[in-house]
Image 1 (spheres, rainbow, N blue to C red):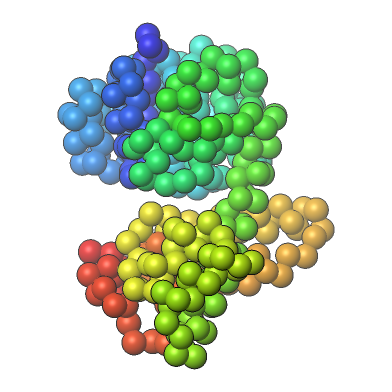
Image 2: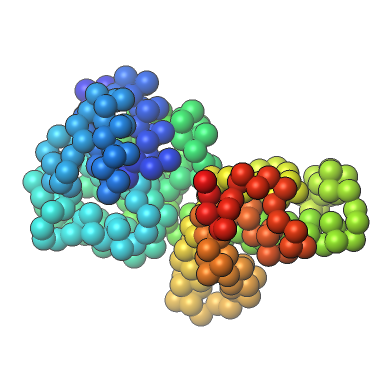
Length: 306
C-alpha cells in the first residue's frame, strides 16, 4: 500500500482505474493527460498532482500506469530524449495497458532497461464498467520480477489475470482477442441486419442465436444495442480498426492470409471514413441495417457522439 502510483492517460479507462486504486487504499500521486482539463478534474477528485510534464510524473510516482491511444503515443511518452517518462526513471516500474503493437512494447522495455527502469504490459479485456469495479481481465507480459512486484496492484484492478511471457507476448494475445471480437461483432451485425431485412423479430432472433452455434460474448454485449441502433461508446470503431490492423500486421509477418480479419478491418475503416469512428464498435451495424437511421438519435448525430 506504500507505493505511489501515477497515471498517464486518464480518459474513460485510465480515470476509472485510478479511482478504483484510490478506493483500494493506494495513493494516486500524479496524473497526466493531453487534455489538461480532464486531468485537472481527476487530480482534484483524487487529491493528486496534475502534471504538465511527463518527467514530473516519474518523479512523483514509483509505479506509473499508462493508458494511451496507439503506437505513436506510446513511443512519444517513452522518448529517448526530451520530455519523457524515462527521465530520472531509475527504479520505476511502468505498467503499460494500451493496445499497441508487440514491437512497441519490446522497444519500450529496452529503453527502460537502459535507464534502470522496468516495464510490463498489462493488456486489458472488458471495458469502462469493469475498470471502475476492478474486474478487468489482464493479459500480462514483460519482466517477470517486475510483474511479481506490481501484482498486488494488478489484483485490485482485475478479477483474473494471466502472465503470458516475455515483452510483446501479451500484446500478441491481445491482438488476437480483439481480432476475433471484431470479426464476431461484424458477423453479428450482418446476421441481425439480414434478419431485420427479412422481417424477423430481432428479440426472437437474438434469443435463437443465444441457444445455437450463433451465440457469442458479443451477442450479449452488443446485440441489443445493434437492434435498437444505440451506439454509445465503450470501445470505439476507430480502436477496432486500429486493433484489427495490429493483428493483420502480425499475420503478414507470419505470411498468413486472414481474409475475415481483413474484411472486418475494411468495415471499421469505412466507419472511420464516414465520420463514425467514435461510435461504439456495435455501430458497424449501421453499415448493414437498412439506412433509416438509429432508433435512439441521441446516441449519435452526423457521426459524432453528443
